[in-house]
Image (cartoon, rainbow, N blue to C red; front, top):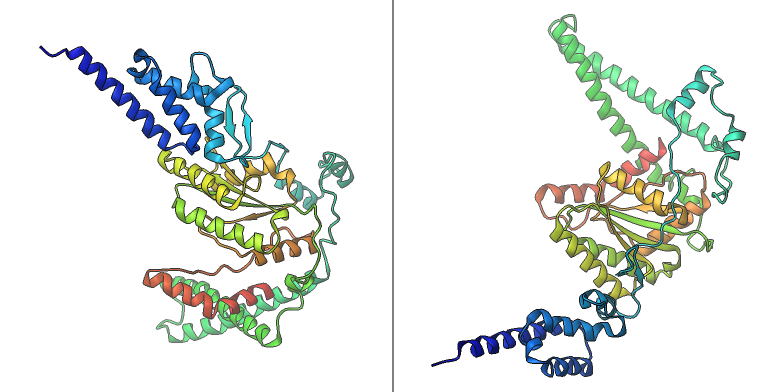
Length: 412
């Protein structure tokens, strides 16, 4: 008669050892460490070796070493497992509960970010005195705020800009007026019936839109022939201009349920390009995730960790998952500004599928340094790598006549 209890005991012991072997295969242990763990498990009493829970407890106890946690060896081995997975360069910290975790974001440096009420400008317009004077507002600024002086907000280019816009408006109105008169001439009742009046109103609006695009392209074409606009912000600095060492810039990339491989491949291309441009000392990269899918979130953390290990990006590339998705993308950016905005002088916001060269980022940083009064510096994006017919048409259009419209928009 077969002893079933002995057979079951032997089967449990074999299953526990196989589970430990599979677990050890996922840990980057050295050959000596792996051999020592296997020897300890093999030398364990039968009551331990036959119980999977006890077997894994012994395994985690070995990994934890002196830091073993009574009653919970797996918790005590977290630090050792993180060191094995992340490497020696990975920053490890203790959270509020005393648990070891991988540092994915820099320490908090909170600051207030309250927008000024719009009623203040309206009050000044109508002559109200209910708002504090500018001197008191400046005195109320927190100590240590950025005191970089800005140029006169009504600089010499404002007069030229106002004149150009008046000229543009005049050209649009004149061309639309002439076209509308021609349209009136071809209507049966020459615009005297209500239906024709409505038709003429829609025609004037649509033709004005076309006229604005026409004159914008003409202005861009002329500027391209003349060599550019003398008021272009790109003329304010050179490619060899020095950069202040304190001009720290945050490159933020808000994402939500995106293609993880595509996002982090693009981020790696940007990081390596900045490294080749000798600009890593000026930039930190933040992936701000609003992802709701748990599987995608795990993939994002794994991709971030793989990226940091591949490019030695710990301390320069950060990942933050936001639990409460308030105000979506704009709220994600605002939350970053409140938590870490005071650590940086400038910020570059990128989409999940955006790619920018290191030379372009360095030039953008020089432009921001040369123009401290500029609030937003916007470049002309270009589509690339499109696949569908419509997307390929858009990509072709941005390459062919995109520069004309960009130059024309800047002119007006």
